[in-house]
Amino acid sequence: MAEAKRAKFGKEGEASRFLKVIVEVLKFRPHLQHLLTHSKLLEVEPTLFIAPVWADAAPKVRSAAAVTKELNRKTAKKPRPTPTPISLATVMLHDLLFAKRGLTLPKEHKLRKKLEKYKPALDKENEKEKKRRKVSSNEGLQIPLPENVASAIEGIGKGKKKAHDAEAGEADGVGEVRWLRVNTLKWTVEAAVEWFEEQRWELYENVESMIEAAKEKSKVYALDAHIEPLLALPSTVSLPSLQPFTDGRLIAQDKASCMPAWVLLSEVLAEEYAEQERLANSGKSESFAEADARQERRKKNGVKVLDATAAPGNKTTMAAAMSGEMGKVVAIERDAGRFKVLKSMCQKAGATNVTPMNTDFLSIDPQDIKFKNISHFLVDPSCSGSGIPSRLDHLIPEAPEEEQAQRIRALSNFQVTILSHAMRFTGARRVVYSTCSIWAQEDEGVVMRILAKKEFQEKGWTLAPRDEVLPTWERRGIVEECGGDATIADSLVRCLPEDQSNGFFVACFVRGEPASGDDSVAAIEVDGEAAPELTHAERQEAFKAKSRQKGGKGGPKAPVVKPVKEASAVRAKVEAPKVGVQKKKAAVPGKKAAYLAEKKRKNEERERAGKKAKSE
Image (cartoon, rainbow, N blue to C red):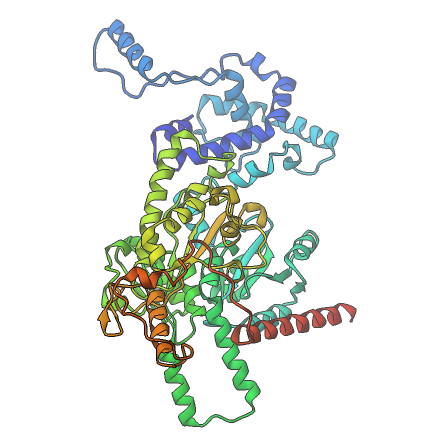
């Protein structure tokens, strides 16, 4: 009762813990009712389980009638339902027999003394019931809960720490899998596989077969099929027992949480691998001068990333690892407490190429010269968190309840604001937007609002095609929420808890036209006359027309035409840009193809090695 009272009037989070107690009692309810009936406890002690009337503070008046009147007035405003004797007895019996701490009552409490007298008889009947049901533990006396409810209450009762751990990837594994990312700033995937083999862990071909094997074995793992540095282990694994986890070579990070950085930078990683492959296959020794020149070139062309809402730092450190030693990551975090967590995470991961900044991302001027070279942005703003299984939001069937609708709308507006801010930066070329929400208002709804903005249409912003956004991942966006456009929906990524990850959403925006140092388009001259301001495509067409007149690369020499005085004359020759998903480019052999071929070869070698080990 005291806990119930705190849940109603106490700190935020107490209600969640009380909810878990209720659910645990309900799981034992049929068995507890059997014990109450068998012991005839309610008949023998009819007054023992009558709940007292709670009064927060008695009014300071002398008359008993006045006291009664005042109490009636208060309870009329805020009536408190009184638990029935059978409900109170059920809860007390559960604590007496099954709670780890037992009855949380003082030893001298009347109710505790009375109940402990009946405990031997209740224990005896409890054992008899286990024999009748042929179960070996008290858990066998429970009734099964629906799967979604069971996952929802997992971990409830740990307050804000649980929500933080879920975001940081340190919470219990989702479903049957514990995801661990190889921190390539300190380790390699190959070295990780060797370490697990030395520790006699068994590598399985895929996550599904690993889950099946984990029912009988504990030391099993698999490589993820979608994100290269990601390992799947059984959810029961103890992280402190893994030395690479304690020293930062392995980082606990949910699969869905790895997707934003992977989508943002996988092409950069492919180019890096392709360059290494070319050097290895060239057969030529590189001179010191050539090596220095290549190093300077890499340093100059290194990718620059900005994480707009960086804490606790998992996505930040993954971006730092993928951007390479010549890449740079600026990590923005507004909250001072979370900023400390971010710095600690970067230090543990060895992310020396990260520059943390304790400031509000929305306070940064997109035209600030300090940020002009940043081309890649991670935007993972505040959201409802409805995709995290340790919260209860996702139990709502299809849409948030009316009482939550206002909050969801406010979050959606904020998400559009912060995403728009990132896309206004001068150097921005690729922006990944993600949420741990399953509500369409925060996911496809935000994407469609951004695509509808004329500002971004004119700047050439579109969605990256599926080929660049986890192409083999099956669960995509909701077509109906994308205005019926299946192409747009196909370029989005969704996750649900049944995918062995948190509920998640990812979208990747790309800027099709390279911008100059200034977003404004200067007027150009066509045959000596100044034309009004034109877009990049219009200027290109104008230059080609001028070149054709002179017999240049634009085509054979053509008759001289009248000077273009109106921008509309040039615009008529240029097809209007289409809003939506960037068209797929023709496949040409290059860095990405070489990387994919090498990755396929390595996977085939691992499969052969695995089959050979099994046969032996």
